[in-house]
Amino acid sequence: MPAEDSCAVCGGELADRACPNTACGLPDRAFSRLYTVSEDADATWDVVYRFKYGDERHLADDLARMLVSFLREHHAELERFDVRTTTALYIGPEARRLWDYLRVVVDAAEQIDPDRSFEVGVITKVRPTGRFLGIGVEERREIAEGELRAALRVPEPGRVEGRRVLVLDDAYSEGFTMREMARALREAGAVEVAGLVFARRKGT
Ligand SMILES: [Zn+2]
Image (cartoon, rainbow, N blue to C red; front, side, top):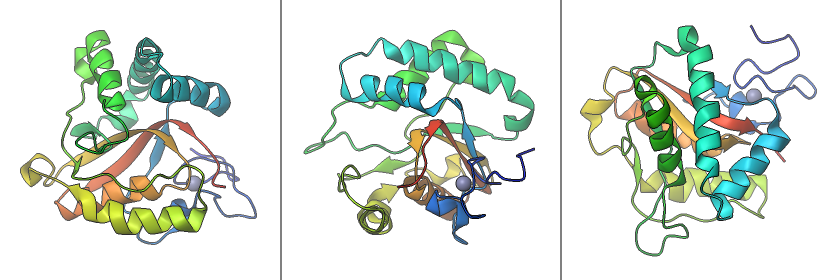
């Protein structure tokens, strides 16, 4: 159970009784819970950052090991999810990134434990959307609710209809991206969507 002074959705510390991660407090949040692999946000975010933006692809194995241990440790709580998948990333023409770094991690996780495998491509993004880095909260929210919402697809709704879906992303800050993933999956028929991230950061 989360402590009294922590957010019931993401487990983060409350500030003035509210979670600084905006989406946690929104009535149309669409995801039920946010699970976090590591509470050591600084160290974990450093590994994620070096893996994602640097060229240290071997770190996928470290992240995969962390992910598998978390899934094993929280098996009882997480076994209700029928589908484990990754956040939609755009990697086609004009993409800023040409590789699906989350897929690399879940492939590595599957090597460690085939029972903890993820399905990829459940939710997809058909074009690039504005960068979240270096802009304010309101602008990020606008991009999420506008461009991102319009670019998301669930190509085969049958894969999520009537199911509980756990969506992996690298980090959680305001939660706008997770909210859009959850919204699209719920519209496609998922009965529950929850997020899973390596590290949670406070909203800025
Ligand atoms: Zn929260």
